[in-house]
Amino acid sequence: MGRLKYVFLLSEYINNYKAKMFFCIVIHSLYKMMPICLGFETAFIISTAFSGNLHYPERHFFIVLGMIISTALLNYLDILVSHDVAYKILTELRNLSYEKIAQISPAGLDGEKSGNIMSIVLEDIEILEWFYAHSIIQIFVAIILPTLALVIMSYFSGYISVLLLLFILLMVSIPYMSRKRSDNQGIKIQSKLGSLNAIIIDGIQGIKDIVTFQWQKEYFRRMYESNDDYNLSFYEYSKRSSSEVATINLLIGISSVASTLIIIYFSHIGKYSSQWILPLISLSTLIYAPLQETLSMSSNYGRIFGAANRVFDFLQTQPIVSNDGKIKCNCVADTFKNKILFDNVFFSYEDKTSGKKNDVLKGMSFEVKEGETVVLVGSSGCGKTTCSKLLQRFWDVEKGGIYINNINIKDIDLSELRKLITVIPQDVYLFNRSIKDNLRLANKNASDDDIITALKNANAIDFVDNLKFGVETFVGERGMRLSGGEKQRLSIAQAFLKDSLILVMDEVTANLDYNNENIINQSLEKLKRNKITLMIAHRLSTIKTADRIVYIKDGICAAEGSFCELMENNEDFRALIGDVNNS
Image (cartoon, rainbow, N blue to C red; front, top):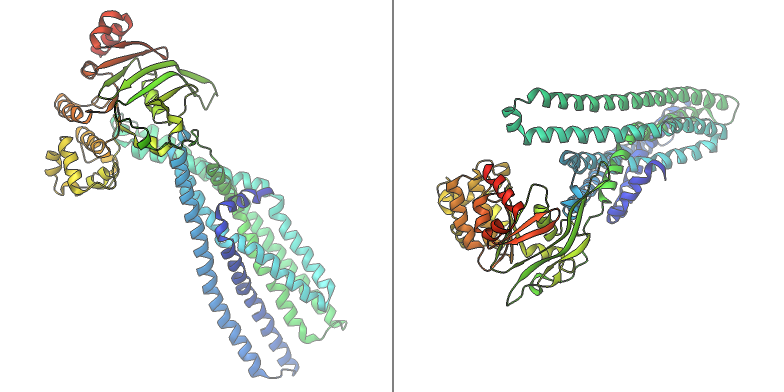
């Protein structure tokens, strides 16, 4: 299938547009045929006029006028229809890409650069517009029209057709011979662009740290190097494509001279009347117009097929977690006593660079009941956050199982499972929308009264009321117009609105001052009522408030109990708490 492989593979995703693409090819063929017919007719009028054999000039005038009007109408239709179809296809591919991001997230994006993904979804798919709006239509037209012209010219002399066919084959061979180099260069350009985008996004998102640590020179050095790599790869690509175009134009020029001479020669020896010399010269010259257009576009095939390769590979990315569960969330909740159970869970991360596995959980077992707050405690990297992610099925356990009310979470529909769980993270992400819009992400059906109640429960109503536009206030990118404590309280308000059975809190108060911690703890006490609450904490004040502590060491539950029990009976836990106190 060669270099067209990925474009045809992508066509599986756009089956609904095949009939429209056929219509585009018909319109474009008629549009490109008009100048050739117009040139042939005009040359015929001139030849017959000079030879004194022009009959019914009025009829020829209206034929030419009709061709001119048809060319204008077909030009309008060609642009309208082809670009309409192309951009609908691009929209479809982008929608599929966004759906794929949602499907494979977050595990499937682990280790991927956000700038590279952005480059695939935006730039690579945009480049495919060249193919769907221009190239694929031009390829068919470049086959159809020259074939018809060669058949017509063979009626006058087969030698003319053979000569033109040889030159056509020579022209086609030029991009064909350099196709591998072109494709490799195209993939390289798109890859370098993705890397450059990743560095730029890193710089925008981390600009405060760059300025704080005076890292501007180092950052700009990295960005300039990446930019130079991209420019160099683009220069190499452009140099090759320019030489291809120049060679093709040279062959067209030589072919025009040769075909003119042979057309005159065969007329001279009596193969056909001299009044056909000018029309045939016109036809032999104009025959190259659709072919030249296609071959000129072929200089971009490397980037087109490189982009198609990256888009197809991305759409083929398989989710790490398969959604085979059928159970709905309302069939999971128990009317008496709910609980979650980690039963002998094993899990390891795979290093994408080395391929080595890093064992994190090696037989983890613990239980959390409704109305109980259990905190996971252990040194950094022991698997606390991993337990949270496994509960949400960001990854699947390798051995053992996780159960909600004795139902394996793998048997629960993935979207239904996540309805059962609310996560309050340490680093709250808010979108650049209003406070109301951000809160409704937790419950799209929440009324204005529900939102106000949630803000009151989260102790956030006071600061929201003091804002100029209240709940309609836009919070800026990542909530940058709000303080850490304010963002955290909005996250808790979201949890009140979602009102899930299971509550997971990951270092919620770790970066807050004493006053904010007290305010947030008050709202958390309301939130935790009648819920299964799993906390991840390093802060001593948070650890002490838990009903039960699960101490993780070497990938297992090394001890569990109240704070006092573990301090009294577990030396490793006492050492860890000593480190926490010292920090």
